[in-house]
Image (tube, rainbow, N blue to C red; front, side, top):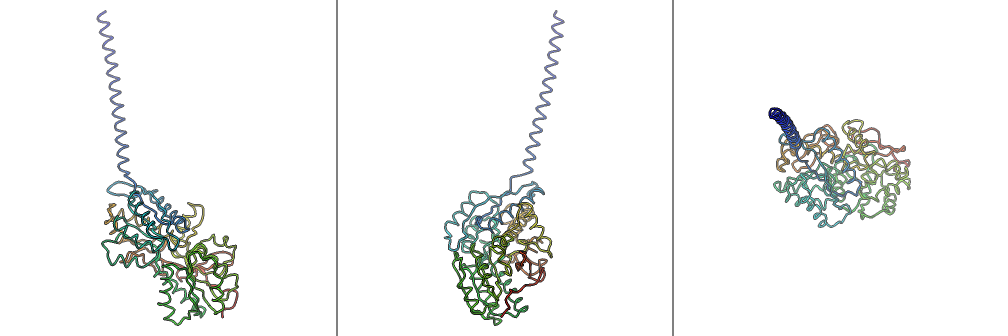
Length: 440
C-alpha cells in the first residue's frame, strides 16, 4: 500500500510540475507580448498636435480646415513624422477665432487664441487670424508662447516688417499665403496686361473698407496708376455689410470707366458682379470678389457672372493644365470631400503649411520651436502653389512662374460657366473676352 501511495504521490507531483511549467511559459509569453506592445506604442510616440485657428464660419476658413485635414491624412498614411527614432502621427485641433467681420475687437479674439495655445498642447498653428488687424497683435501672443504659426489668410505686409524689426521675438510667425504687396503686384500685372491688350487706361476703384483692401488700393495707385498715366475716375471704400453697389456702378458707367477694379472678401460682394452684369457694361469688372472665386458661384448667381475677371490668390485653389501639382491637390480635395474648393484664398497655403511643417519636424528631428523655425526658414518645396520659399520676413515668395515661386492667377468666367485662367502667361489657358458692348 505504501508503495502504491508513493507512486500516486510522485505522479501528482509530476503533473503539478508540468502545470507549473506551462503556467510559467504562458506568463512569460504574456509578459513578452505586453512588452512588445509597449515598445510598439513607444515607437509610435505621442501625436504631433497642429492647431487650425481662424474664422471657421467663412468659406476660406472652412476650406482651409479641410485642406489641413487632407494634408494630415496624406502624411499619416506614410507613417507620420519621425522624431528621435519614433514615428508620430499628426492630429488637428481647432478653434474658431470669429474675427472675420471688419471692425471685430481684437481683445476677445486674442483671448481665444491665448487660451487655445495654453490649453490645447499644440506644437504649431496654421491658418491664423482672418483679419490683419488681429494678426498683428496676435504675433505678440505667439511670441510669448513660442509656438510656430504659419498664416494663410491675413495679408498685411506689416507682419514682415514686425518680424524684421525684432526677429528674436517674432521669428515664430510665417505666412504661406499671398500678402497685399504681392496681391498689388498681381493686380498691377493684370492692369498692365489689359492696357497692352486693349488700350484701356480709365479706371474706377471700388473696394471694401478694410485695412488689407485699402493697403492694396494704395499700392496699386502709387506703384502703377500714377506712374503710368492712368485716369482714376473715382475711389470708393464701402462698409463690410454693403450689398447694394448701384450708385458706385452708375457713377463708373457715367464717367466712362473701362475697368472697374474691385477688391472685396465680404459675403455680400457677389452682388457687385450681378449688378454690374445687369447694366450690360462696356467696361471690364476685374479684381478680387471672394464669392466669385469658386466653381459654385455659377449656380449660386444663376449664371449671371460671365465676363467677370477674378483673382485666385493661390494656385492650387484652382487646377492648372500647365502645372500638375496644383491639379493633384485640387483633385485630391474633391475626391476626399466630395466637392471642389470654393475658396480662392487659404486652402492651398494651408495644405502646404502642413507639409512644410512635417518636413521641418523631420529635418530638425525635434519639436523644439527654435529648431523648427530654423528648419522652416530653409524651406524649398515644389507644391500646389508653385515653388515655396520664404523671404527674410518669413513671407512666401510669389511670382509669375510656378517653377520659381508661388503664384496667383487671373480667371475669367466664360459664358458656359467655366473658370478660364487668362494670366499670368505661364499658366494661361485662354484669352480675355470683352463684354458684349464695345469698349469706349
